[in-house]
Image (tube, rainbow, N blue to C red; front, side):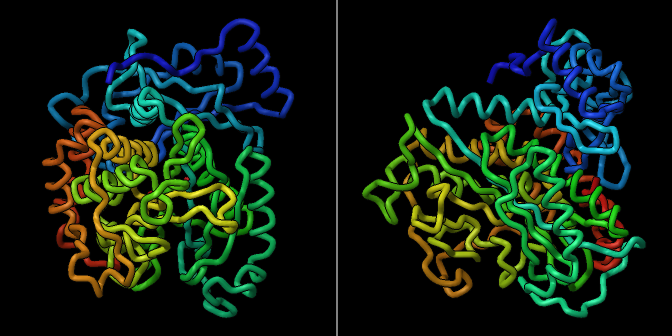
Amino acid sequence: MPLTDPMPVLTGAELTARLADLTGNGVRVLVGSVVDMAGVARAKTVPLRRAAAFHVAGMGASPSWNVFCADGAIAFTDRLGVVGDLRLRADLTAARVVGGGYAWAPAEFFGQDGEPYAPCARGQLRRVQAAVEAAGLSATVGHELEFVLTGPDGARLPERHWQPYGLGAVMERGGFAADLTEALEEAGLPVEQLHAEYGTGQFEVSLAPAEPLASADGVVLGRLVICRVAREHGLLASFSPLPFAGGAGNGAHLHLSLEQDGVPLLSGGSGPHGLTPQGASAIAGIVRGLPGTLGVFAGSALSPLRLRPGRWSGVFACWGLENREAAVRLVAATRGTPHGANVELKCVDPSANVYLATAALLGLALDGIARGAELPPEVRVNPVQDPSAELLPRDQPAVLDALAASGTARRILGDEVMAALLAVRRHEAAAYADTGVGDLADRFRFAWSV
């Protein structure tokens, strides 16, 4: 896909008005962030008087930002090393006030010549979204944010009163839950629901669906708000795929719906559960492409520890209506689904780069539609009971080898992103091959927190 510059640039009266709006909301500082290949948010911060420069010209950043690892190492490649400079530009059109005198904005990488930079994850999602729209389709994406609260020292919270999905569990942290809901809404993130999850101290927030880029931005902003509110309550929030050895894992489920000319593709058709031919092909593309793209959705050293049968983590490359053990769960259009039919990808976890994960999901669906892929048989039972249900690879080196060999992943994400992503994840695989589960969980408990 061509590397055009679609990031909107405010100038003149529009820029002046935006800065005045931020000033009027008490903003003194602007922080702009990107998400690297390890799924970690990295940022630059400027006083508000420098916000225009941050937006138009950008702040300097080494190309090595694209190969930073979750443990602080740098996975240098032949093209990403110590030489060169990039510009990190904050998208003021998407800026949000987050309190305490701060505003946050997503940022993108550009070259010093002003051209888009190929390994930029947010820029790649822009390009994939543009390809979807060029095909005459529109996509809506919703995200679920699962996290585990800990004490201020990172220790487990006591288990008293905690029941999975329990009312008492929510009420025990009632002040936190109420403040979090309010803070998310004030930051421009409509909350669909919040509930206590399965694990002790674990919560889930479902954000309202939106167009793909805005939805991915919302995940980064949502984590920022969750972590800030947690600290205000003397807590920390972990977005690790496995915060504690033997505990519940955190997912980062993605929901996707598709339309063409305002007509849904996942309902109203003559196929299974109302699927249209294009909707069926979209699901087929996702299911068929999952083994080769799991390294995008769940490629960290901790990811295999979450991907286990019986944990509703989507470890089987199959689909099924409301099947929570299948990697692809179809949610049909009923009175109980006000946003209409969608598919939920369950294997993705919070260590993934949310922009690349969203781009990969869109790209697989689009590839399936373009090829007219045939929908595989539905799995109507627990996949562990169905011999035809394929287990996804769970060994990290095998996951990464499959990603490296996937022509589909390379077409969706591009050579530059693939090289950087594989370098980072292969560093993890080599560095932590012999690390025990407990040590691994302790080492990365807060790597994906903000």
